[in-house]
Length: 225
Image (cartoon, rainbow, N blue to C red; front, side, top):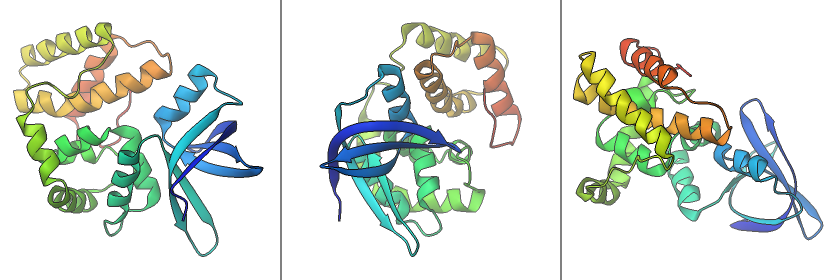
């Protein structure tokens, strides 16, 4: 059983919406699937020939051994909890953590925000219902703590983006969207802005507004900027 690994980064690459690193650990090369956010962090910082540490979940299948790497033990443990849900595989688990932080998933579970969870590729309505039901029982303490917090856990560190999001809420309110609807879209908008920021892609208020309106007006679960 591999719990974690520390080694030299040899290379990183993307293949079909999956992200990988090759790590040299004492002369052995370990191919590990990682989260999108860490992949773009490596690319942005141009990290190479440096030691990195990842918490590892090892999945053994009949024809292959798969390694999934996380930068924190919490991410790894949350991934394991997701895999324990019947019918949810490793790629859906990675898809959830690629799209949302742990606190965002807990918030979605707490508010029964099924529409938000359904935006993860491969998750249908029935699977979303099962995920929310099972994780709600496992994370009761985390949800209680979350409810007691007065500080918004979805604050983006980029001041300019924060201003856009504030303006976006006012714009949606002026367009007669309900507060509950506006609150339901905020986590996914902020996650998208974080990803776009890491990719150094320009973010405009117009695109954010269009994205929010499309999301709120349609039942589609696969809308992107």
